Image 1 (tube, rainbow, N blue to C red):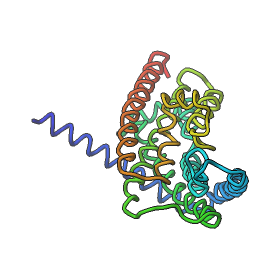
Image 2 (image 1 turned 90 degrees about the vertical axis):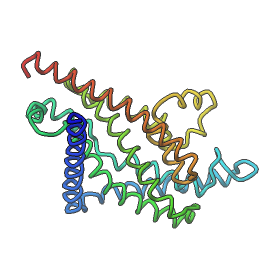
Image 3 (image 1 turned 30 degrees about the horizontal axis):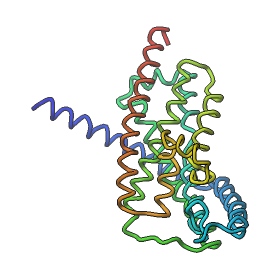
Amino acid sequence: MKVGVDARGSWWTALQKFWAVMQVTLRSRVRYLGDLWGSVFFILVVMYVFIELWRVTYAQGGDASGLVAGFSLTQMIWYLVATETIIMSMIPIHRHIENEIKNGDVAIRLNKPYSFLGWHAAVFLGEGALKALVLAGMGGVAAFWAVGFPSFQASQVPALLLSFVLTAMLNFLWGAMIGLLAFWTEDVTGFYFVFDRLKWLMGGFLMPITLFPGWMQDFVAWSPFPLMIYEPARMAIDFSWAKWFDVSSRQLGLLVLLSLMAWGMYRAGVRRLDVNGG
């Protein structure tokens, strides 16, 4: 019984630390809200360009229902808001982890009473939540001005918020694993460029994967990337509880797998530091 109590206490303490770091990060970013103006300007420019592009595309005609790849014009524009918010709200966590490993700061954190990856995840979510709120708001204003609101119900908000947290954690783990490669190589920039752009392409960042050729859709379906971008973005503009349960369960499964992989990389990297006297 004592072991069970200790285990629960350990998990509860870890969650409290995680929440505390998130709160500190969020308060810190609120004080420097002006730093987000560059991102706001960028998303507005992107929205303008793609709104005009998709208007021309839909003017040329879709299928018999006026749809392109299963999306109406309104859904396509709001899909873009969702994907831009997902990607642009994510801080370059690979760079933070890479710098800590290269500078030796990771050795200092080993003595701290919190998880190295957990601390970075809390910072990632704390800053990402604020950026997502601002970017979704400004992108939503542009989308509403262009095409109006998609069908939406307030009861969906809690489910979509949870979906954003799961999506953010998947993107965090993907970026963290790239950053952890710094244990074995001095510079992870090349790895990040390849793996992150692969995620953009196969995750449906700039366009839905339903626009891909059939063979490529089948290939992408076996990758983790749609669960990081396409699936949650599509669900935000075409919500159903059945779809939410399906996507969330698959995201949770992938979250467990990536967590184990990231933890394994971290432990292997720490052992390498110990062997080399780092």
